Image 1 (tube, rainbow, N blue to C red):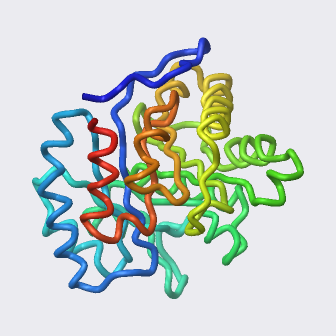
Image 2: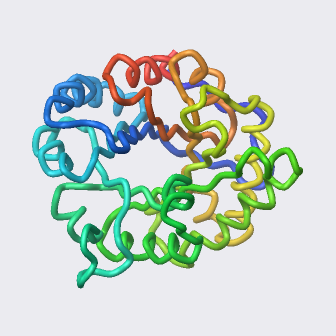
Image 3: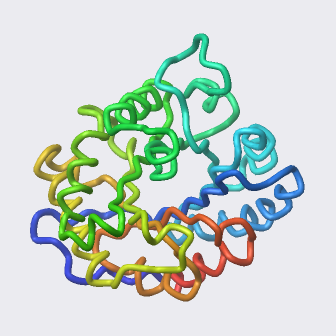
Length: 264
């Protein structure tokens, strides 16, 4: 049974399912599909408790994973897409290609893309728009660095990224935000529950201010060293609608521990 989040915003309370998305990053060959099979076996039960499971594998595995888990309730997605529908963009994949491979989601604006590939919020917004036009649900990532947090700029940075990265129009339930403090990704460091609550509250209020009721319905995920030990505390906070999970999603054991933590 899911617990209600605490300290709900007076702005507008949203009623949305929990969403757990595994981001495999640049990890996994076909042997990893065995882990996905185990996760898929839990997906139908999770859906009965209003918890949606998804995996975003490397592009090389997306079609095979989508085919292997079809009908299980486990959704799939890609880790990036190009803003253009087609063209001379060697090494890139379009949103239409993600859709054709069976994807439902596409992650855009992950901090590793922003840092390693110099992606601006404008570029992220264009990718999110391309995803929407292809019938995908973009997961728009935002987050501050350690230096920005220590300088007291965390909220301003994140809200600026939200403002610049989210397209003006999207269907109900058609867009997800993932707040991932850069300094917590893969480091084992996790913000305090109070800090996570405050940021998710601020993001929620900015979305409501901009989009009204539609903004209130946007799922806001937390990401950054989420595991079975801390998920129970973090994912029951108000406006924390699930998690974007990195390393812990690479094995069924790690991912399902997070699921079990929020089922309690």
